[in-house]
Amino acid sequence: MAIALFCLTLPVMTVLASKGVVPLLYVCTLLACLLQFHVKRSFPPIDKHMALAVAVFLLWAAVSSAWSPDPSRGLLTIVKLAPLYAAGFLLVSLAVRLAEQDKQRVLRFLAVGWFLAFSVVLVEITFHYPISGTLRGLSESDHINLSRLNRGVTALTLLVWPLAALKVGRARGWPLIVPLCLLIYLLPQTEASAAVLALIVGLLGLGLAIMHPKMSHIILIASFVGFFVLAPVGGKVFYEKGLVDANWVQMSARHRSHIWNFTVDRFLEKPVLGWGFDASSQMDNAGAPPFSPRGNNLARDAKRATEGDAGQESPKVSQNTRESLKKIIPSHPHNAALQILMETGLVGTFLVACILFLVYRRATALPSFIRPFCTAQILGVLAVAGTAYGIWQSQWQTIILSAALTLALTKPPDSHSHQD
Image 1 (cartoon, rainbow, N blue to C red):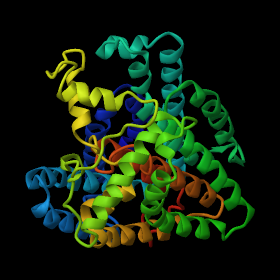
Image 2: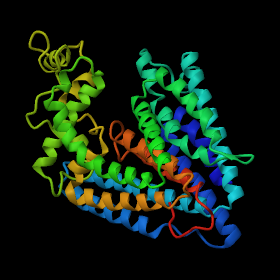
Image 3: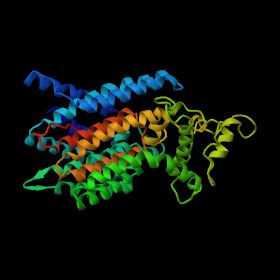
């Protein structure tokens, strides 16, 4: 029942209060474990190989924090992440062991939660944010009001794929069609570019994986390898080819091109050990020029922020603008691969690759029918991780763990050799 509650509440929580997904995970895991202990007098075993791989990475992260600009910040992030992973692994383990009828029941709760969250987003956009305005007040900027929905819309895009495992009568797969159509209708009305990219690559991966049974294996391997190989190469190529000054490219993408180029340069300075776990937000500019593409006023604002129009600090430039112009990396590189490379070096990247190998093994062990949809979800996670949130953000990590949980609901109950 606790897992059903989690799946029902999670989609709506991501839309209205994305930070609430972390305590939601803790509460539901605690309830699920207490119920398990009450019934069976034991706690669920977790995936030992995955837990060991994550623990080794966190150990390296703790070591690398010693040479980061702010060691205490890195250690604090690890303290936040370790129990989060433990809770996620426990809940996934419980989901794997549910009986088939119980899994179908939980998937129905997920479907209800998904449609409720979609309805909330639609009401917010159509009627000028009545719910979020009541809960936390409206901003003067419609852009900010709309962007507050980004995490929720992104979560809806990632959580839609497991609905393919929901049975309606004897049919399977059809319950996914309506949500996909609704997403295609909704996404153009939002500013969740990462969610749009996640849906596009997910649909492409789904189509290719359906074509041939072994295609999921190839797609996942190519995606995991390409994620780390293409990120530094693309970061330099996009910048050197003038993407930062291309007027036809969205300004946020141009800014990311500038950030990625800088992040690659810093990674190449310390490629093996990296700059230290969670060091991204502490990195200085190291003499690199600020983001100032042609036709942009950031260079002018940078001068005003430091000198003012008459040699003094200009009051017209907001404090947020001044602070954001001090660093090329605002809080994170908006690319998980580059963040892992720069912060933990090749050592940490190898450990993450081991984790991804275990993810590959778990994903390809799923039933052949659901494997293409799992591939679509993983591609979507990589698309978002490669363009949007900081990889160590607790909310984002919770959404990733939730995606793993929903895939665990598609696994046959009699197969426990690999726990997702």
